[in-house]
Image 1 (cartoon, helix red, strand yellow):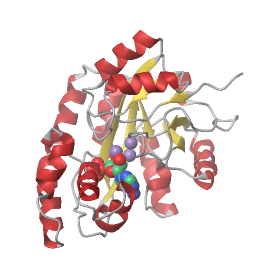
Image 2 (cartoon, rainbow, N blue to C red):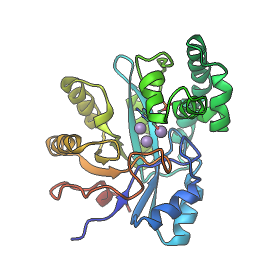
Image 3 (spheres, helix red, strand yellow):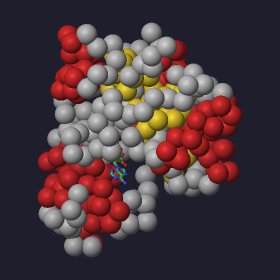
Image 4 (tube, rainbow, N blue to C red):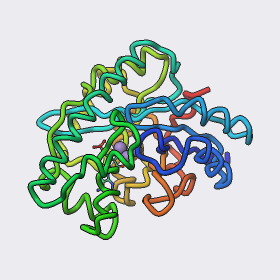
Length: 280
Ligand code: AMP
Ligand code: MN
Ligand code: MN
Ligand code: MN
């Protein structure tokens, strides 16, 4: 059977992407995507617009979200939810709660950056975010590039914003239990986003995946824009080992700011069961 060109992870202006939800749906369609999920960070406000445009161009669409979760000793993992009812009140309220922490975190990030000579970063980042509840490190990164303290967004993270760098601050996100409860309660399925990006030891990764499985987690991103071939092999192995369904998502944020464009990922290894077999 011909593999489906599914892209189940990307971002719009409703979080830290550069394209509107409608622009994203059109670009996905133009790139040959055959099933799309929009997965903004902790926010589902773009889904209606993306779904409407996707229907307009004849592109199958499922609801998505990428929830920020605190794990262990100041680690952050991202959980993608797919195919849920976007009116489910505990999900809507839970995400609002997660977003409500972003503004105060942004002020703390700005205070740290100020100490190393990057001034007015809160105002600068807010200009890119538009909304204090959506403000993310990506918006700080764009402002720092604008100030020419780094040549691109990627290097801003390396120099200023990644864990251990001057502008990093710890922050309590959702718990894994809550994130999975909201998505599963809303009739959706949960997927561990880009596992190759976490700085977890093998034992810590196994602990996280075991807990995710215990809580009813079903899938793992084997193919991600931020994975290299070795990550893909490793997480294909984890999918087999844990019996997880396999997902595929570019994590596209915008032209010129992403590892890979919408729908431009290799096919999943043939023996894995794709998550979309569980989505209508
Ligand atoms: P936040 O949710 O505010 O912590 O921001 C996290 C976002 O920053 C991620 O979703 C990515 O879009 C971006 N990001 C994180 N690390 C990097 C990196 N090393 N290079 C480029 N973008 C990154
Ligand atoms: Mn992002
Ligand atoms: Mn992520
Ligand atoms: Mn993402």
